Length: 287
Image (cartoon, rainbow, N blue to C red; front, top):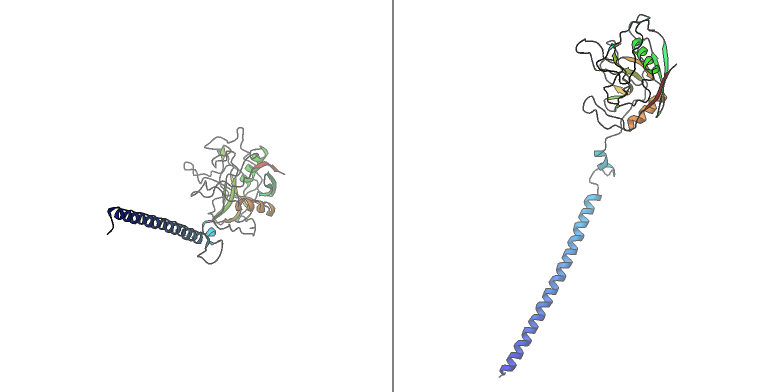
């Protein structure tokens, strides 16, 4: 029979063995936990890689990008011939240049002579701009009072140093210019009537006057200094005076401006925005 001392020694050894086994089990549990954690990290990382790199679409690597990037604009290449009036105007013409609602955007600007205005023939004009030269042909038979005003403003240096403040790329494809303030509200301090007819339509290459509709008090036209260059589609009502055209070389320069897009500052109405590629007139001269 073991003595008390022997029993105590046996109990002590048994306790030591239990402590060792518990320590070994705890160590194994820690190792397993570390391995499982590492495996989980690998699985999660693999899943993230799979989700961010595999294309579930048609197989086009650019499918995801194309869903958020607007498609490039489509610009017609055919230049439309200038229209002809159904009935020629009296030559010379008599014009009316009325006091505008706002003062001239450039101090000292004067309205042109209103009587004895030629209503036949053309005038060549050149806009020297930062994007290149724009060669215009102004047609007096279409709009003698408008051509008379444009020529006068050009000779006064009114357009020099101005920027084109608005471009439309969808629906109405045009570049609008002629406001020294760059805000879309500036004018020469005078206004004059539209020179349009009901069958008038618009097309690539046309120069036309921008306006604010009929004056609510007088029911007369609100043309001033702002004009637009149609470089593509323009499904407009016949309310904007066509007074000339831009040559094909100049149109290609405008196309590049259009492809550069705009800032959307005129959306949703009247549409478009300031061109991302600036168009600045250094000078406008007439022959």
